Image 1 (cartoon, rainbow over the protein chains, first blue to last red):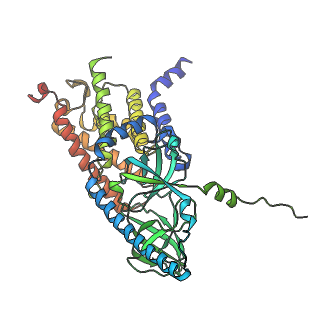
Image 2 (cartoon, each protein chain N blue to C red; image 1 turned 60 degrees about the vertical axis):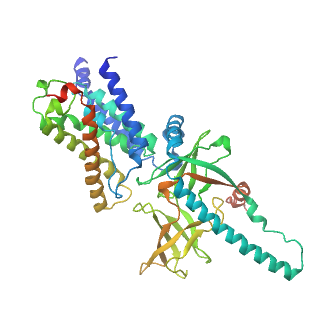
Image 3 (cartoon, chains in turn brown, red; image 1 turned 90 degrees about the vertical axis):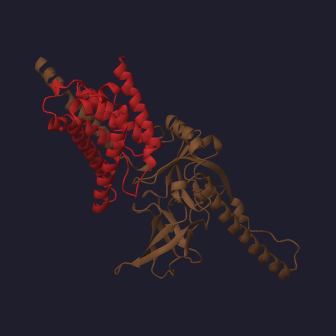
Length: 284
Length: 173
C-alpha cells in the first residue's frame, strides 16, 4: 500500500499534467459557440467589468474614423430619402392621393444601440463583447450591425453584457445575395484576412460583376433584407461545381468597431412558430 | 505569504491584464501576435514544485482563455509549456543548484543562457498555440510565419519587460 502511495506521490506531477491536459482538451473540443457557458466567456462579470473599464478610455481613440463613416452613411441615407420622396410624389400624382401608406414591413424591426467593449480579429474564431444584456432586451440570435454593415449575431447573453459571434468566425454562416438579384449564397469567413469573407454556394446562373454590392437576403429573422455586407473582389467557379465562390471585401471595419445596433425583430416568435416542423399526422 | 509570492501574484495580474487589454489586439502585419503573459511561467522560481507550476500555468491559461474567448487553447499550451520548462532549463543550465537566486533571469542564468531559455520557451508556446489554432484552418505558410514572427515580437517585448523587472542591485553586476 505504501509502495502504491509512493508511486502516486512520485509521479503526481504527471497525473496532474494529464488531468490538466484532458481539461484543456475538453474545453478545446467544446468550441462550438452554441454550447458555451456564460461563465467561461468574455460576457462574465469579471471579464466584462475589465473590458468596460478599458473601453471607457479606448473608445475615444478612433472617433475620427467612426465619425467619417457615420457622415458618409448619413449622406447615403439622405440621398435615399430624396429618391424615395421623389418616387412617392410620382405615385401620388398617378393615383391622385394626398397620402400614401408606407410598407409596414419596416416597422417590424427595432434597433438597440450598444457599445463594443471587447473585440478580436486575429484569432481563428473571433468573438465580440457588448455592454448590453438581457435586462436591456437583448436575446440570443439577434443580428448586430454597425454604421457600415453587418457585425455578427448575439450568442451568449448575461444580465448587462452579451457576446456575439463575429462575422470573422467560421461558425457564423449568413444567407446573402448580390444586390438586385434573387439568387442566394452563404457568407462565411475563411480565416485569412479580417477584411474579407467568402460568399459560397451562389447558384451558377447568378449574375454579378466585380465591385457589385452584396447584401443580406432576409431569409431569416436575424437580419432584415438589404443590410450591406461588402463588395465583390473576385469570383470563381469550380469546373465540376454548380456554384460560384466569391471573395467579398467587407464594409465593416472590425478593427475599429465601437457602437453597434442590435436588431430586434418583432415577428421572430411568429416566424418561428410558422417555420416549426409540422408533426406528421396519420391520415388513415 | 512571503514577499516573493505577493510579487508574483502582482506580476501575474499585470501580465494577464496587459495581454487581454493591449497585446491581444495587436497583430502586426497580420502575422505577429505578442504572447506576453507566459513571462510569468518563464520567471517562476526553479525551486517551485512541478505540481504548483502546472497548476499556476493551467489557471493562467484558463483566465486568458476566458477573457479572449479562445476556449482551451491557452490552457493547453500553458500546461504543456509548464511541463516542458524543466527539460528546457536543463538544456542551457546544467547545474541549477549553484544558482544565486531561484528565479531564472539574466543575472542568475547569465545573459546568453537566459536569452536562449527565453527564446525556446516562447518558440514552443507560439508553435503550440498556432498549431492548436491550425486544427480549423490549415495553411502551412501562414502557420510558419505566425510562429516565427510572433516569437520574435514576444521575445522583443519580454526582453523589454526584463530590463525594468531587474532590481538595481542585480544590474550592477
